Image (cartoon, rainbow, N blue to C red):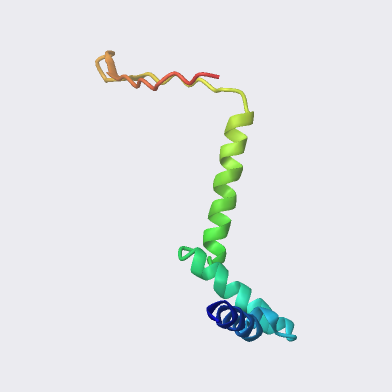
Length: 93
């Protein structure tokens, strides 16, 4: 008897699911609600945030593909001595 009641509950649940709706918009809303529940960090991004992400990825890709550049910087004080020494870590290629 309990097996039949479990099956009837399952059948009733499936029949009431918004995913079983004939209307495509209702099904889409149900899927979007499930995605939002699984990924609470999902939110709409502004155009500025998306553009920033694209520019960051573009710059990172360009740095990976371009040959390494070395810059030597010497700054001297008025009396002719070295005023600044800049040491940057060596990048392995």
